[in-house]
Structure formats: C-alpha cells, structure tokens
Length: 385
Image 1: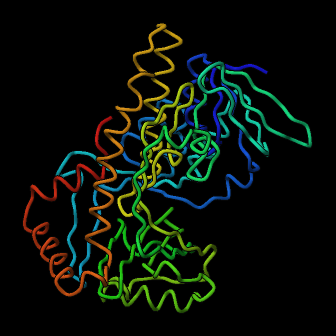
Image 2 (image 1 turned 30 degrees about the horizontal axis):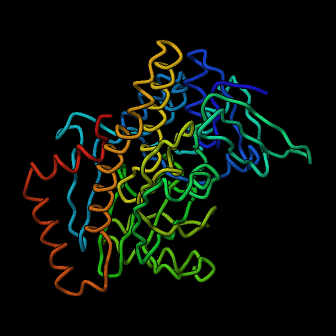
C-alpha cells in the first residue's frame, strides 16, 4: 500500500486531520490499534473553544454540534462558597460550546472518506529520515504502508513519540499530587454553566454533556482507588465542596461511569522529527482544569492540515517547516493557563496556610479586576493560532 500521509491514531485529532486532508484531495490512511467501538466508548472532555467549533464547520461536520451543543457565554468560579461569574461574551465577545469529545469523534467517523484500519497491532514507524513507511499486524498478517509523511496522533502512550530517538527530544513534565475522580450521571446539570469550585477539602467541578447528562469531579489524592468511592460517598463529598445553594439544587443518581484521571503537564519538543509530525496528546498533556486538551489537539491538526495543503497544493515546505515552532507557541500559552487554573482552584497541603491565603487573594483580585477577568476569559475561550 501507498499513501501521501499516514496518520497514527483514530481519536478526534487523527480523524480531524484525515477529514481535512480528504476535503483537499490529499490521500491518507489512518491506523488505530483499538476497535472503533472502543474509541467511541472513551469518556473525555466536552468544552470546545470557538476555534474548535470553526474547525468542525470547516470539516463540514458541525450539523449535530450546532443542534445539540450547549453554547456557554460564561463560567462560574467559587471559593469557599463565594461565587464569581466570568462573562466570556461581555469581556471578550466570544463563547464556548459544550459538546462531548465522544460526539466529535462520532461525527468525524461518520464523515470519514479515506481508509481507516482499526485493530492494527504492533504498529512500527520506519526510516523517518528517509523514505518513511509504517508496518502493522492484523489478523496475524504483517502489512506495510509507504508514505511521504507520518502524523503521530496516537496519544501520550502511543508509538509515534516513542519512535523518536531520545536524544532528539526534549521533554518537560510536572506530575501533580492528585487526580480527578469523575462521575457521569443521567441527571440535568446543577447549573446552566460550569462551576469550578475551590474548597479547603479540595477542588470540585460541575460540568455537563447535555441538558440531561452531567459530569462531576472532585479532587482526590493520586494514590486513591475508584473502588473506594461508592456513589453515595461521592455525592456527599461533592456537596461539601459546593456552596449551600448549589448543593441543595444538585440532582444525584446512579453513576453510569466513574474513573480517576491523574493530572500532569507535559510537552515534548520539537514536534517534528524527519518525516514524522507529532500532534495532540502525543506531543503534550495539560491538566483538564482549563479545558484545553481536546482544543489544543484540534489546533495542532488544523495547523498541520494547512501545512500539508500548502505542501501538496503549492509545492511549498514553509508550512511544514514552521509547524513545530508555531504549534509550540500556542501550546505553551495553554500550558501556562492550565497550570494557573490548577494552582488557583486545587488544594496543595504542602503550601500550608500561607499558600491558601495567596489563593484567596488571587480570587479576590480576580473578582475586583475587569482586566484580570478579561485575561481569564481570553484564555478560556481560546487564543488565536
């Protein structure tokens, strides 16, 4: 087999890149080690920046997003029960849309025109400095795909970044000493917009997937086990961390999914090694506090698609040569914002009473400064590429 661009990973990043290349007549093949059902079963983020919405429109897959997505014009921050609404539209004239990553993936799967090979085992990348090719095993048979370029969209644990010699990459990482215990429940959300809550017992988030499905999180120690948390224990703990009026309005029910996600910040540089380009979680991880993970992946592949379109349409390598530096500039700004949100809203026992008073001062400053609120809003709704 031969193609122009081999895409590793059929998550939203890989599928979006494939869709944009399809629409511009650039041949591509997507390889995914899991089944299509497994990919669709992943429970992930659900807040789309305006730039991600624009990319869905460009990919001609935004019909369901516009009919089912929930446009949010602001968000609510809470500190020990004191509330502050950040008015995105009033402050910066933009908004975000709540639309689950699973639905983004489904829309892109349904629109897929090129070939996607699921359950591709033992994927290996070869000759990245020469004439690249990819091998994999399916149903006991080894296959080969020759290509011009490879796009590594296969996540943090994927083969793409692991195929780059260690000496060719510089990595930056921070592991946080806690995770998010998340519960998905078929109940209406407790509020029309997301609530980010800081409490002495730990962070909490009231999120949503639709008007009838809600997603809630509480901060837990990194070593915590999900089996230690009954639904009753989770709801009791969540109520403790919310203001009295929010806790009273909360509608609970049996969880339909419960998991713990560790928090980390991670960046690999550069994003290109010969014919291989890294995008999405293969290149970077952000704490979920700022809702940046999926949006950064969409930004990456939007830039990468433009670079390939320029390459094959205009025979210019300027786009692919600048991709790494351009993408990393936006990535580090998103890393900073996600770190800041995480630092403000979570408890860090090692920082002691002084650290918590600094957090309170930061919240009070934010509450009293329109300029500070504009900075938060500008970053949350998404910086330009």
